[in-house]
Image 1: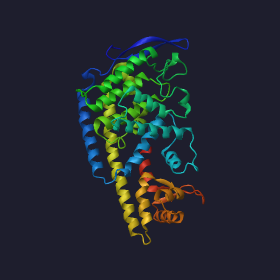
Image 2: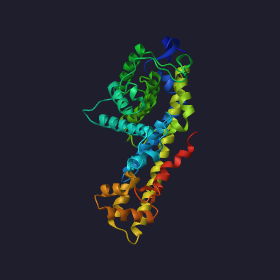
Image 3: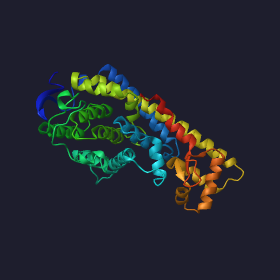
Image 4: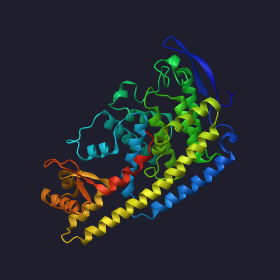
Length: 390
């Protein structure tokens, strides 16, 4: 391996000698990043992002999509790490926590949502934290709160050697930098985050930062999810793209083996070009799919609105409930009562009308504590699950 990529140094873990990898500071040489293949994909990715911005500017209510898109990101990023919670699990718990008690996996997904929202608020607030090592630690603290990894120093960079893959260090698939080298790697990463505009396009810079963070692996647990949180936040800050609308975790999950292979190829062979092309292909695909999903959901919502308006016994409260469904696609009579600030009988009537039109469907089969879902909307959100690798 050339010095331009990184160096291996000897490290001892649990009495075993291993070869730990210490990456060189970013950026790599320009020719590694801006090959003809990368340039071509970069043009396509920027065009797709422009189309995504236009598509959402034409939509009168961005909340039709934002609530669901951000939750899909939280679910898929968590699933990459083996967390089993599904989108339905998350939506059911948010709608009726007394009926669907949260297990550890659901809590992990909720933590991801909390960390992402925290990061967005910090970066939007002039007095908030900028992109920094402190922000990264705060994201990690929220991600690991109250879950299995909470015993692994949440919000603190590791002080011991870790490894990836293998039941013991000597059989590890990859060994990140030792603690005494790790902090200097992180300091260099922070410098790169703070660099003023360079000749490296922002999408390519984001791709580089993700690899570098995953290679440094500064936490004892949760590194993959923090690394993907950074992608979402960087896309919003650097590419002027609402981070609720474009997420790459679904693409990474659909191509999970290739995702890991490309990360390894940077470390092992210095293949920045291959990784960057893969990342940009993900941006292209995800942006196109986001536009199509938004169009389908908007058409569904407008169709349902027209059907409701034609209903003979339509009442205003039913229309008000329909308007709330994109932000509350799973709900109960009690939650409708609170949401619309109305009485329980009136809320029940609104739900009954939407069930009669098959806009809502009852999901629990029980007479008490019934849970209802916006069927067409939920089906549209789950449409991409079939394309995910087993």
